[in-house]
Length: 182
Image 1 (tube, rainbow, N blue to C red):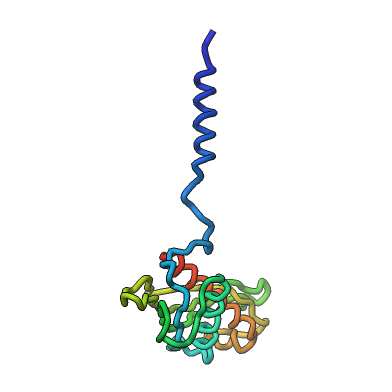
Image 2 (image 1 turned 135 degrees about the vertical axis):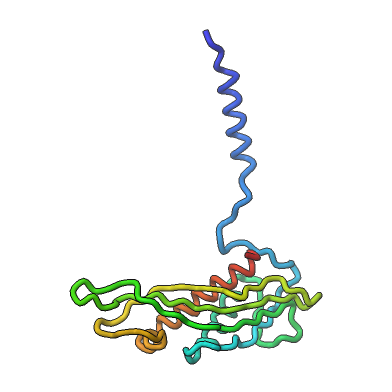
């Protein structure tokens, strides 16, 4: 008769230790690698190099709100008297058709991508904590039938919520990237 109890015992011990040890992964959007003393963050208005009016203001407001929603940060428009400063610029907004009507083969859904750059600098030592020269956020938008879109401003003019949604998606992506130091 073969003795299997040592093998079974080994499996139980290894399973138990694996369950107790946990893992090093965390849910995306929940981490924070910023130094503990960073509380007040200066976020001046982003620069707008795109052809979408107001996008800089909407994105700046959304980024401030996203930091505030994380609970321990106080975003302000000033760059003095703060623990860190986040600067950024919206480089461009690109549009591409991704869905078409079955009958007329006209574009009915578009992918819109915001390209930006941003830098998060600690004021205590002047070191850049995080930066991205090519931050890219993409979202999809439906358009009314018969509307041809070559300029993303058309979609945003047609649907103000699309512009707000894009700003919020951008802010969430940017703040998560900073906090998790991606």
